Amino acid sequence: MKKRYIISLFALLLVISAAGWYYYPQYKINQIKKQSVIDQNASSDSKQITYLDHLKNSPKSTLNHLVLGDSVAEGRGSEEGGFASKVNENLQNLTGKSIILENQGVSGFTSQGLLNQLDIPAVQKSVEKADIISINIGGNDLVQIAKKQGPLKAIQSYDDVKSEYQQNLNDIFKNIRKHNPNAILVLNELYNVVNAEQKYYPATEKLLNDWNLIAYETALSYKPALVVPVSDALQTDDMDKWLFDTIHPNEEGYDRIASKTVTTFQNQSYKEAQ
Image (tube, rainbow, N blue to C red; front, side, top):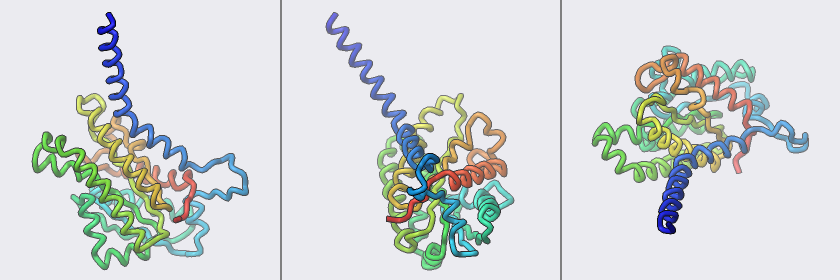
């Protein structure tokens, strides 16, 4: 009886540990989100302002918006310039300022590709003059291994790929901050394109939560920076409305990303570089 009790207890502990392993990244992301939202009840002495307030208060009449990253950054699936163009239009209306958009997104880019791009002098100059830098990166890091070597190899290499992505993203932010300490860095969450009814959905959610937690934790170290909760805007239950192909958003999808970006600018407390 005692042996059976010990086995049952051990099994229960395994289930609890597995659940913690699965849900911990999303729990951490939610905690970071809560800490980033402006406190509406804070006293006037605390002088909290939103990212949108910061842009409105800028003495500049013209701002520069640089976009870096992969095909989603580039705007594939859109004839209107993707989310970046839509964000620009909204921010111009809300701030009353002219915002010049420069899109350097490259289809197929991994985090290493973006890191290499930041070594190009012309790109460094664009980084130096930017007031806002939007980044969409990371989805291709694991996908490319699966395409080249198969899904089994991708699973076996997961920890290595994750560590490399984490290091690359940190180096990307560090490189940008070397050339521009004060630009607002806007990093997009990665979103899921696997329907919740498919058997691979839980695994893809776990993977994306791991990737997105890296994004949130990296952004915390390189203020002023924020992460746009894109996965909240692009839910899998209505993919037919926002998906252009198997991966990229259509116009509605990019509209949703842009709307979520602007909302994030309006709700998050602006934190200056330390």
